[in-house]
Amino acid sequence: MALDLRAKKLADLILDYSIKLKKGDRLLLQYDPAFMDYGEILAKDAKERGASVRHDCLTWNPDFLRNLLMREGYGHWDDDRERRIDLASWCNTRILVDAQEDLDYAKGIPLSRVSEFTTKVIAPYKNVLYREKNGKEVVRWNICAYPSKAQAKLAVMNYKKYSDLVFSSCLRDWTKLESDMQKIKACFDHSKLVEINDAKGNHVQFSLASRAGNVSSATHNMPGGEVFYGPEEDSIEGKIYFAIPSLRDGQLIRGVTLEFRKGEVVSYSAEENQAFLDSTLNNVRGSKRVGEFGIGCNYGIFQASGNLILDEKIGGTIHLALGKSISTDINDGGGKSDGDTHWDLVCDLRPTASSKGGNIYVDGKLVQSKGMWMKNIN
Image 1 (cartoon, rainbow, N blue to C red):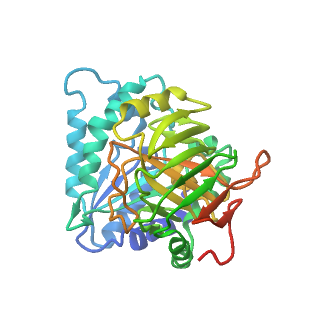
Image 2 (cartoon, rainbow, N blue to C red):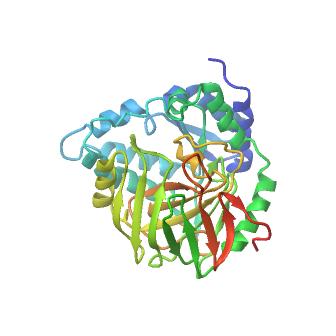
Image 3 (cartoon, helix red, strand yellow):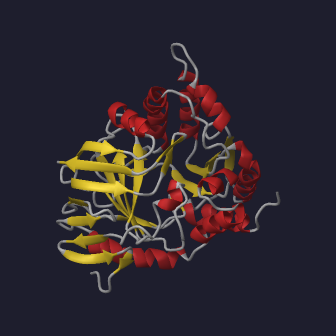
């Protein structure tokens, strides 16, 4: 299949805008080998800018991941953990192409092994990758969406429509969108009470009184388009329903409902794949606490697809991440929650054929209704 001409534009945007690649940088490229052609474009363009490049086609390789998860014996994952840590230690810039052609690579593998792998391999690797020095991240990183046939199938779209979704969400005027999101950030910063009524009539609330947000305009994620916070950890109360499906660790889960008391999940359910939800919340450290509250602001994403990097940015949605907070200051989107995961679940506040949508209130004032912002929210 011929490479989409928009792919080159996207590569340039990521290298120049997202990670601001410069001469002498050490770039780690991670991708499913099915997307080697796009990896080669990124590598070629990076080298032209004077960067050195290392390719990692294992970390995101579905066949390799499945075989890895099935390994038995003492120390069976040690070599892969050290391989990942070596790559993370070497780089000061990193791009992960978030596309796969086998979304079911973990099918049939005991969920306890997936949870164990998260704790023993992924968590220590990410601790190195996202390391800080003097309060700043050492590695300038970006996770970028890219079209795949498997993800198009999951989204119930043909490949062309899914490609249009991906590129329309990414190839935007990020300077203007960032300006618009700064206004939304100003509305939520240091608010004493945020209340969300979801499309099913549930209510959840929390405080941002000691917190300020971060505007994500395609630096860490491509596409960008969210404002995120670390909510006050013990302030989260109530119930919320996440209508948009979530694909994580090769597992698809739908219709999650969570109930919180004093910041912790006290009851939960899923309409599909309850076993994965059980395994995660009962086995992965920190997964019953919320590390992030995010507000989707990218109205260029025209429908949910099951691909989190797109879905969490949809204008008219919010998301809560279970587990670890973003590792920035509490006045820059960060929080104090710790854990071995960061799992975003997306709540759609837009009206559908079966619901009237939801609302967001900030300190008692209605600021968003049915997925659309009210005038003069500040």
